[in-house]
Image 1 (cartoon, rainbow, N blue to C red):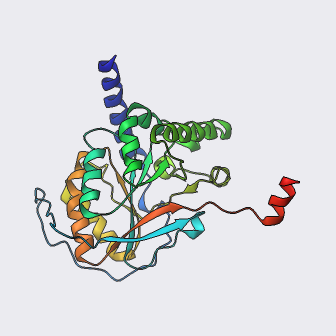
Image 2 (cartoon, rainbow, N blue to C red; image 1 turned 180 degrees about the vertical axis):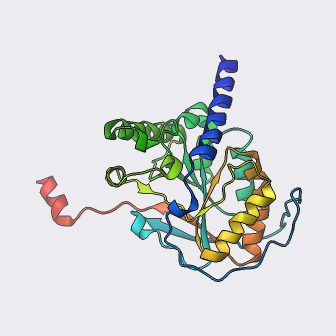
Image 3 (cartoon, rainbow, N blue to C red; image 1 turned 60 degrees about the vertical axis):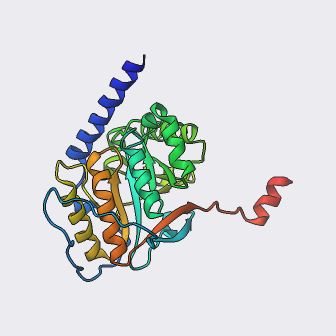
Length: 277
């Protein structure tokens, strides 16, 4: 039984990796609320096998906690970023990402695939217990635009429930697989009190490139935008490898990592009174 689960996990991870590489839309489709900023400096290291620098001691990378109840509330200031990770959790990868985030004293937003969370509930719960933002990413990473509306929403709900059960916490954020969406789906998901997580900076860590190249690309895009939600994937080894370098560069250049928190909207007093009566 354990061997079957292990093989199933490996197969699913391979599928997610392949899907990200073949179906991810081009940069032109990236959703952004960032203001273009002047070009910044290049990374201070080079070479495909460059060792990831680690900063020891006290860190000053952690920024404010931003409470949001809708995508309209998700407004970042200059030199603010949100670190988001899709497709996990998976042992040997997600736990390394968690350790690195802890080392730098920052939190991320983890958009979990429901099936992965079901396979690794202890790890999924640890992500939540460490104080990270929890979101869902459908149940099995389906392209929702390839399904009819009812089937697509069933996939969303199934993923949300699986992640909620595994983490033991409410799921308040959602990201479309492949960033493939429709206005109708987006509106229906918002009606479930889920904040749809867009993307400003796509690291493309799912491409078969070196960790150094992923870091360089991410920083180059960030220099142009000045702020934004960074998309990464905690199922890839190269992501955990490049993350200390990326965080060191962000810290050295004065960026702050924002922690997301969901803020429940209050019903109007007259509506509450009407319901009570």
